Length: 104
Image 1 (cartoon, rainbow, N blue to C red):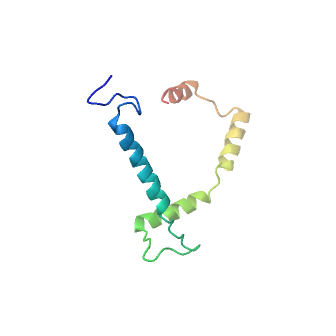
Image 2: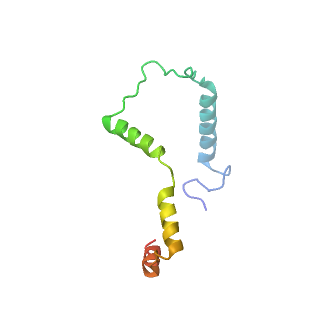
Image 3: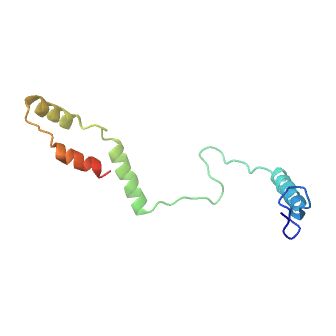
């Protein structure tokens, strides 16, 4: 198929083919020509860079710190439930469990 001189086949009567190749070469040359910016020394920032945390961000950091100090498993609750199951005091409501599973 040939539409306005564009055949859709790379390199065959395709005016975009050579233009695309030239653009790719130009991009490649510009990437190679740019020297990498020197990385700031460890612990230092580039001149003029600074970070200011809002009160809300500081509050979130504090909360995250407090949460990370908590254990992932509440061992007291697990022990209590285990004792209640062993004694027969804790009964599982299968309808409630099924309903919650279906909500996923």
